[in-house]
Length: 167
Image (cartoon, rainbow, N blue to C red; front, side, top):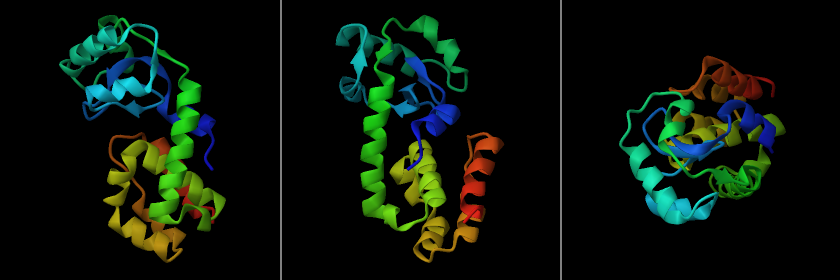
């Protein structure tokens, strides 16, 4: 399983709401919050009315800025991000098991799958049809060629590609 440290390295940690690269409200280690009711899944420093107001304000701001840009527009802060991330990681690996036979792949492929699914979401990862076909065949060289994403750094894409290439 990919460690939380790997995810933290790529995602960073922000305890206020911000817009990700595609304009989705996000917090913590890349926890997407596209719907206001999803805020209730997290621990906050302020009452929910304040958190929801922050979400509405941030949702209306321009996307494509650094996370620090959004901090002055928010009053609530995320609490216990590590606990939330650990639970989300455990839940994600269960879903990866069902959809991608996660445990049948070598450790580096598992780490790559976690990184891809964390970043893209399972729906986004499912759109990588060639990657999924290569996983089914245990063709990790093809997985390495098919795992590149838009909107992440080249260093992160290379790291994920190298995980597949190491098998």
